[in-house]
Length: 305
Image (cartoon, rainbow, N blue to C red):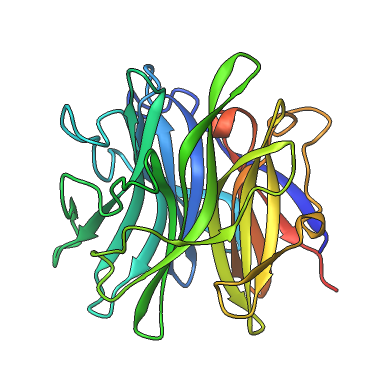
């Protein structure tokens, strides 16, 4: 694979009070024949993340056709798992044409730095987005104690299939406690009730790794392809890639991704949270740059064979 960087698309840059900076975890959704809606997490001046979107022209991804004037849903009430921010990670259309928004809720800790657990919001018959519950649909368990987040879900073969990051450990790096987690897989009949533990898909294999970011899975030419971020010690995120014949057993092929940091600019320190879709016959990757997306998001195109 040879991905050609096309540049920065958008950064909030004091857009509104709730979208003061950043454009984190780009999650594309085909709105209609001419428009791609990119769901994003924007940060306010206090670093609290809220979900919104921008609309891009399919024919010119630099053309912004509109953006959300307010968050699509706000942070949780005090004391809940998403009181300190929400990060939209995946959108799935249900058999009844409702949209299921899976997101990571961010909760600051006292003796640990934070927890990430998965919440669900669903569109009603008037297309308003509402939380299914005030508690996570992927809550912590004895084997996935602190992290059950970064969810990516598809509906296939009458089953909801989810890949997500999970973990129970911390590691000290450069004097700072950092999370340790793997990518796991689980299934659900209704997309609401999920098992307490998933099966490991992508595990930490290298000495310089300590975790992964939101996986994004597509099925292309009969093969499941996973795009994910690798948390690299002392460096931050880099991009990873794996393939599978069944969505459960994966072979890591990180060297194939062939998209790294730039010499300077918005993605010179980090590349993360890749999301790949087909637009006008081409595979397009949206991704974040420095600061986990504080410098915005851009895109790359897969060069034709």
